[in-house]
Image (cartoon, rainbow, N blue to C red; front, side, top):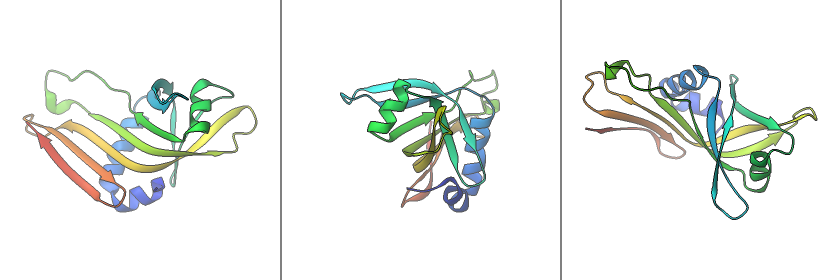
Length: 147
């Protein structure tokens, strides 16, 4: 697992673009696992600090219980419809890994994200292909194109 500081060190350009996608809007989507293993999708807010990314929720929320039982998550940035010029689409970002609960001050749950995957998806500069740039723990940065 990697901290946000480690991702920024290993993949600075990608980390900057991903952080931009998550800070452009307030509400995002997180996937957690229910007790029976089925996925649950919930809304969530994300905070980026210099060294870490955190999320929070109300005490006792079902997503909080999911994360306490199984810390694995997938987090997706808010998206917007592509404009007429596809190269102007800002793209979307994803983070995945495990959470570590920190002290939320008693009135909320707060988790630090330990990351295994960071992904940015957007349209290439020519508007011809989908460009997927990713960082995975142990593999570094990779870029793929889909026409």
